[in-house]
Length: 391
Image (cartoon, rainbow, N blue to C red; front, side, top):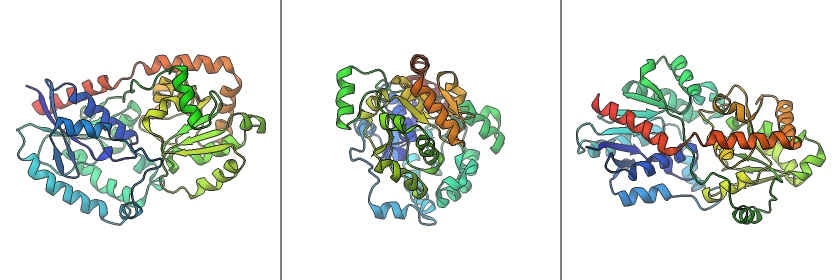
């Protein structure tokens, strides 16, 4: 008999970031194995049980650059109590649907906070950034997670996290029993690989970029991604280097970005920086593959999926020492102190000037990336569902 699972699908709402990619990948893998897992989806309290509808949700993607929804909807999301109200409605609608499902149907919430449902529960906690760096999140989100996450952890039969770095943080900070927390690394889409020259040339031409002619950074524009310090480090590079390799930012505008613009504008006026906004998934592999260096010096991550994607596409990587990324990618990247602009500058310059080192790291990164796959992630997660359903 297949394991019966309801997967929370809130994170599929565009623009799709790391948790959205994770959710979509699990859903896609489980739709391909109906003999072993019967997967349904729960979105906005509505149960989605049609495989065709679920497959459409997997493929859903924002095609408008920097899509963030209507302004009124964004403003509404920051109102005090709005998350609690939405959670109440989500639970009210979802409970009636769950009660009609077969006994031992497992609910998996891939985005921290599940609705309050009377069924076996698995949740994924990607990181604890709201505790480690609360100042880098909207206040309402921090209050929401501080109130709701302890209850969710108590209710959950198993907690999945995405790296040993995050697992240690969860055990040390939240005091959960070690057997309850399982590490399952993220995977890599098959599209993140070396590309035929004609594909690479076509995408780069659309953005007026030259192969090996730019430094790339990918991620939502928010304080935790440490983009302001990356801009500061880039500005310290020799003028000739900045003219040769502009800095290209890819990612939707997030929150608390005012300090970022003060550093971004001078570079943009000198044509040393370009912000492409939100870029469709189909173009990301070429942007990674064409970069002279990929820089991801985030202050805190649970895993750091863009680093894996960049390595899969053959880009040499600079990332943060002492981070989750360093814990699994350290030997295939140049590590920099994310709180020191000079350290980041030296790491960038090292890869931009040392061609042999860049080539070695390209090869190491590709070899490392091949160890991570979404089928492996889905298999390990399915084993957790089976354990919980039988427990």
